[in-house]
Length: 173
Image 1 (tube, rainbow, N blue to C red):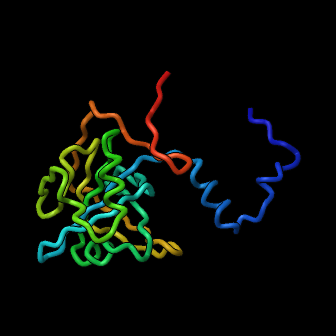
Image 2 (cartoon, rainbow, N blue to C red; image 1 turned 180 degrees about the vertical axis):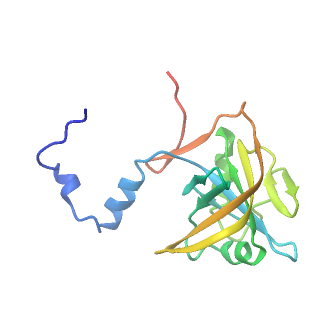
């Protein structure tokens, strides 16, 4: 059984609307790191780094991620109706960082596969090609739900994690 203190520590009693405290509290939940990619009908490839990714359903196979409303890739993703989630491995930090920057070729330095018009990172730990299933308001972000149409998994690669604002690795002891 978990013991619950009768009084909250001072740090937990602060306003839940303090943006820095909220961000730090969210940041203590370890997540994987993904790069979400899409391609416009005219062939423009776009992508973004996201750690807000989760499975939703096995039947039908659904997942979701939450890009910021201002994400440059969002209009192309919505227009095409298709995207890929690329779960990064330990060597993916450079890829993750590149996809957070603007005004550079995010796709130039890596090997990419073409899954029926959707770019997929050849070195991903796992990859999911998706059709846009739903697009919901999520405050300053969107909640994008994808129907998985294709997937791949490399069980030999170790996942890249993000915790407390830094990349981490799984430690199994």
